[in-house]
Image 1: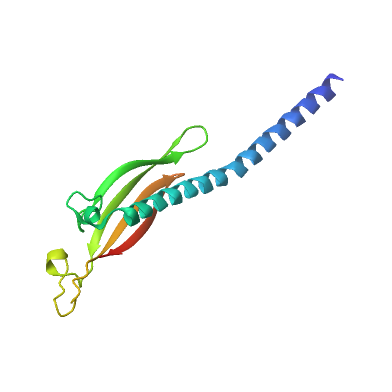
Image 2: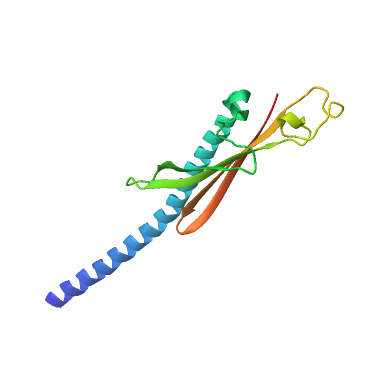
Length: 146
């Protein structure tokens, strides 16, 4: 009777450990997917910021997007995983003038090539983050004109 009970307890313990391992294998990809969703949501926020700010604020000297080759890099918290572990990343922002902008606006256009004095800029945000020891990059670019 004691031997049968010991064998039954051992088998239940092995079965319990196997089921625990299987459940952990199922949750690992879900955390990766969760982090991808959170970083996508943050990049949507970056894109929306570049789309809703006034053109004067975007092109001013105090803009969040400095003129290329200068980068504005900031460490950010994009969200939290279950259990409260933060999802950290680093966002880099810059802006590029269209080559046809007038020289005063960062381009090499002329009155003949740009008679309406259009001003066009590309605002780029790149976020760098790590998941499971691997590094990932995501970027969003917004084109604005005036």
